[in-house]
Length: 337
Ligand code: PMT
Image (cartoon, rainbow, N blue to C red):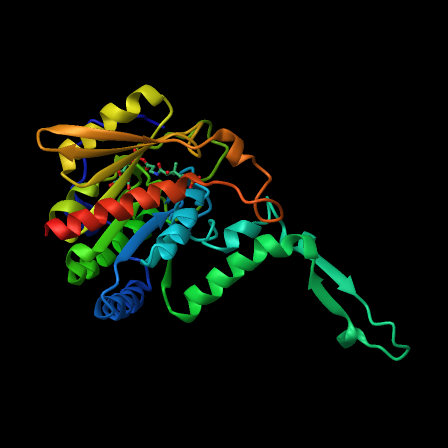
């Protein structure tokens, strides 16, 4: 697979002209429109959170694809704190990645079956209908606030779910939802935590059927996905408060890369995270006049012990501080008009 192409990168328009939209795009956007209108009328702030990784199919009848790393932890966790802060949330996530609330009981860290107890009835004529299944008492203190927040969120209609799988799904949805958010004016925020593919295979270069093996190595030349932050800021969500993420594996690159992105796209905040320590120190960079302001958010590593949480004691999550910081900045930005 070649690492770079000499071809001109696709512009966003050329990308959309070459790639097909997801089948349910119009219905998805209609529901988003209704959700936004409801919360705009209530004077509520709305945040679009993108979360999880996008895939790039290698065949039309897809058997193989390239994936981008992201479990969806950052997005799902942040969604809960945005809800707590009074935002309505559009949670646009990779299908089957972590979701707000249910993330506490993910099958890999806290399988919910481990939290259940069976109480058979001792009556002589008891049937299976008389058997009770209860939540183990030891998990109740941790479960109750999560369940409470979940029920309240759902009954008040504060969370709207949207799913994507491929980078095409993601980009079509992002464009559509960003444009719908225009009616919110400055009350809208875009929090772009998804890990988006940088390279793709245009439909006209794709094999229709499964690529056959047995002919030696496979060489695929991929094209560059346009950096959509540019149209997001300049066209699709001109009034929105836009927060992008920068993921690096060399922590020394975080701040310069974040500043370069602010310079290039002119949006409000870049959150920098290092792959190895992304649950701990995180930087936020903002443009201030001619210069930049960078703040570091850090939490005590002792408060992030893996394995605690759902069934045990509460853990401190960096997203709590990220969202608090952003809520304040968004508020000041709205006031400045
Ligand atoms: O889900 P977790 O496992 O908790 O992981 C969270 C995370 C590490 C994935 C998340 O915190 C994060 O850093 N997400 C952004 C990762 C990323 O795609 O970085 P990037 O350097 O490739 O892109 C930077 C920004 O450009 C992103 O905000 C992205 O939305 C945007 N982008 C990317 C590609 C593209 N074609 N167009 C874009 O606009």
